[in-house]
Length: 165
Image 1 (cartoon, one colour):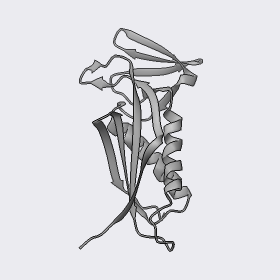
Image 2 (cartoon, helix red, strand yellow; image 1 turned 180 degrees about the vertical axis):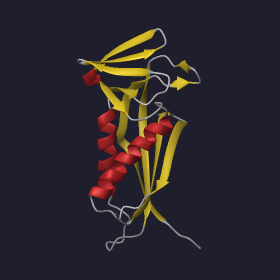
Image 3 (cartoon, helix red, strand yellow; image 1 turned 135 degrees about the horizontal axis):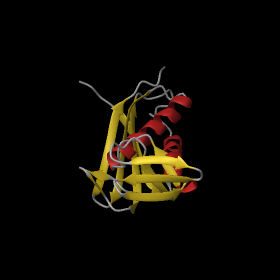
Image 4 (tube, helix red, strand yellow; image 1 turned 60 degrees about the horizontal axis):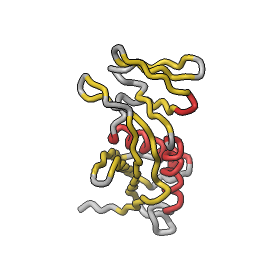
């Protein structure tokens, strides 16, 4: 029988407000925003101190990812339907005949295909994994992130990790 222990963080400071326009099929959503709420769960073996991870350490890693996205336009840089170019101090995003221009300082260009909750959750998980790896938390074996766009509506991402390397 397999067992696992886990720690979950969520709450007031694990939030961000951001704008996006996801692609749906061959169409583009109107520009709009959400007040996102992040929840992160890690699983792993107990440390010598008898915990998987200090809540504060995990919250800090998630909060830093949320702070990066807060009050920005989330650009899906790997979209197959949008083109995006950094022109001077602006990002120019094109979809067919439509063109949008955003001040570069207001944009976070994400290396994802679409700004869905699932892919943004994966981006956050990548950031959390990097922070835990840098902090030496080799006992963590799984990371899961849920990202709520509005109450009752969320997407998520989870994967096994090897932080020993």
